[in-house]
Amino acid sequence: QVHLVESGGGEVQPGESLTLSCAASGSVSNIYRMAWYRQAPPKQREMVARITDTGSALYTNSVKGRFTISRDNAKNTVTLQMNSLKPEDTAVYYCVADEVWGQGIQVTVSA
Image (cartoon, rainbow, N blue to C red; front, side, top):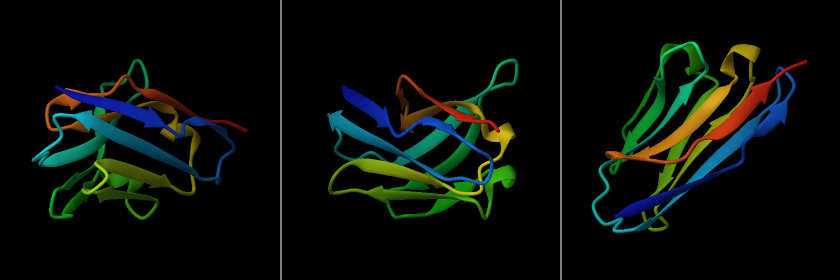
């Protein structure tokens, strides 16, 4: 069983940056894909960024050029660097490792 722990959320002003981190523990061998999703009710949950074990990354259009996902396979961690944050980035962000979801962490962007 894989257990995920997210950290780094909080409240910032528009234009500022935050870094989200997620550490996987337990049966972590051979995790293929790690990702960050977000949900801001009443919107549907959406994939923000994902990265494979070989480093191939994919981003949703609204964060391209602002967010960067990275992964440390040796430490079983995935990081989401979020720059130039906008109010519409406000959401609960979830770390995902293959089919396992973290509990989520709040990111609020507000003036």
